[in-house]
Image (tube, rainbow, N blue to C red):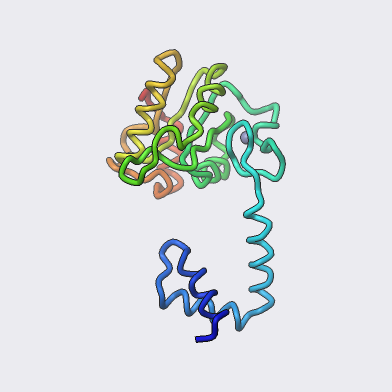
Length: 191
Ligand SMILES: [Zn+2]
């Protein structure tokens, strides 16, 4: 096979859920749609250079994200999420006016991810002036391990809540439909 096609297929296969067949299909599509392909390449180039907000780890173009800079947001409520997918979901529903903290992962001894690999010291620092910490994490072994670690770390001095009961056991936070997420978020309960 031509080397550059082989390289492109190899790159495609790195994407989650893309196998050999799909990789070939996408690679050929890109080659056949060179204008779109160039735009995709340009957008990837820009997006991968985004920074993480130095306060909350949200993605941003500068040092601090728009949410942290917004003086109308309630800095005393911090919603902890694994990825910005949850943040985007909540923001699109306009149901939350606090701030966030993005972990970019969950504690997972099986995958070799430990508390030190997440930026929990920064969360602890931010939590010092907070009144409520909302843990919007998956109901999974990793989600619960991470939640427990955060609860222990914050040492009982702060109100910690999670999405309400009534949502399915073992939920994946980003798989909940809009209305369920909204209800679960608004009717949150103590952890
Ligand atoms: Zn921020």
